[in-house]
Length: 97
Length: 330
Image (cartoon, rainbow over all chains, first blue to last red; front, side):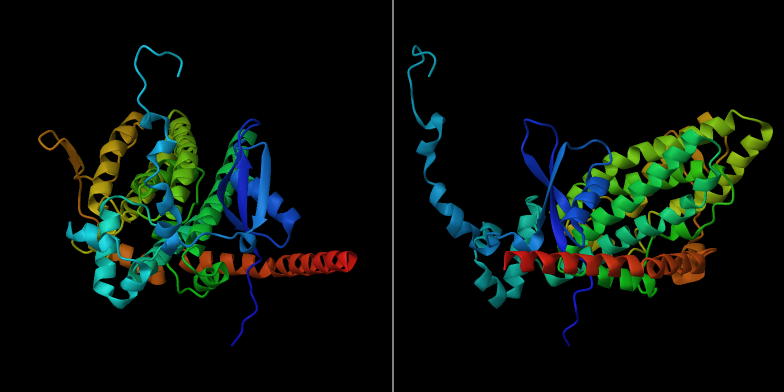
């Protein structure tokens, strides 16, 4: 039996705490449309001045990497320590490097 | 080394060998790795979390009722504004928690159906009445105090979304407890009638609040497994003891008497000893026979039904807007 979806669509909420900072994921909520999602995000996630800007994105529109594939996906970076500054030995006398 | 070796197995291995999968999962939990929504997890872990988070969410929602009862009758504009903010927070906490439960693959509508059909539990404490203004003080001080005591260890729960919801909730709860204590303090410093009102309220709430921590460790059927999974970090009895130890001096400061003739500080253990808890009352309330179980459920159902046309109208409006946009694009 194919039941119609009873919940309003799910949205992911991102809040910019103050200008100069990036938007950060804070959680999710249900809303019928984008305008309602912004209104609900205001009420659910910024009751104490937690933000100056909101983003809402339909959860269904987010493409995520598969945790089962995490090893294969991130393994290539594991043996490349030379991408970090601490990999290089510089004499102490040399300053500002 | 054994568990580390297991840990390296990919998901296809996990499905072939459930025992190894469980062991690898336990190893992750043991080294304090957080579990996230799409990670593999044993089905009983998922079901335990859904049950616990949903019960927690329902408690926040039903918890709005006893206090909502006093919004129109708060004794001053300041108290009214505070109470509205607090009740709104409880609603918000319910929203965070339903969202966390949904990450485990359950529909919010299904959880709400379970609550309204009487198939889901919520905290026994919300089935007690709030006949006097002092009850609003007692709820903030004691009920929210006990909730915070329960929730602080949950901030370190092994399941990421639940832990993050708890961090947010704990931050917001601390004003709830302080505003409650402030109400009690005002009454305790007031007229003899006001002092008596505060004392009556403490008398009625004390034992039900101690029951909020759940059955004693020997009787709790979920504790051991939940502790292994690091969903729960501290046992019911330990939390209850901690609550009594910090609350008894607060009552003393108010000049109120905790209604337990056996309550006594034991200098040897540095803990308060308390009298026996009447667990038959707890069982009765959980089974649906508390003072207000029926009224609470009736209020939730009425609110849900009364809101149906709003939900329908919003969905219809959204569909119409979407259709219009597609029309413009085409």
